[in-house]
Length: 222
Image (cartoon, rainbow, N blue to C red; front, side, top):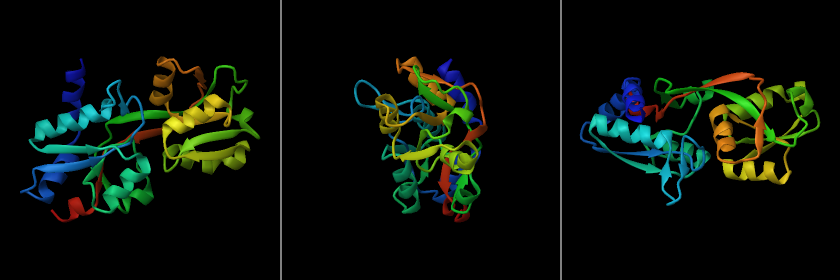
C-alpha cells in the first residue's frame, strides 16, 4: 500500500522534479530542507533518524528522477531561510501557499490537503472557538495556522503564543502554559494516536494544501 501511494504521488510532481533538473542539467544532487518535528510528515524515530511521509516522498522522487538528494532538518523557519540564502534547493515541510510566498518561491502541485483544527488537553472544557475568549492558543511561527489565528483574533478574543517547533508547542500545552494549539489535522490526530492525552475540536475553519517549494530562480533560470 505504501509503495502504491508513493507511486501515485510521483505523478503529481512534474513541476518540482523538472524544475530542479532543468535549472542545471549537470547537477545530480539536490539539497532539500525540511522541518524537524511535524509528525507524521517528518519526525525522528527510535534511532534518531528522520522519517515520515515527507521523507519517504522526496526520496521516492529522487529515485524516480535519477538524482541524489541530501535532506537537512533545521526546522520550519530555518528551512525557509536555507532556500532563500541558497543553502538548499527546495523545501518539503508541510508549507502552504500564500500570496507573499508566491513572490519568492515556486510551488509544485499539492501532495496533501489537510484541515486546520484546534487541539486541547483531554480535561479541557473548551468545546468551540467561542470558548477561546481570554485563552492562549499556541501555533508554529510562519504557518497557515498562524495566519488564521492573527486574522480571527479579534473575533474570538484569544491570545496567541508562537513557537519555532512543534515539540515545544505541545510540551507547553501539556504543562498548561497554553490552553490550546492550532495545527494540521493529521498532526494532531497522530499525536493522539501516539498516546498524547489530547482531543480535537470537530469544527474546521480552514483547509490547507501542502506542496513542495522551490526558490523562484530555479524555474526562471531554466
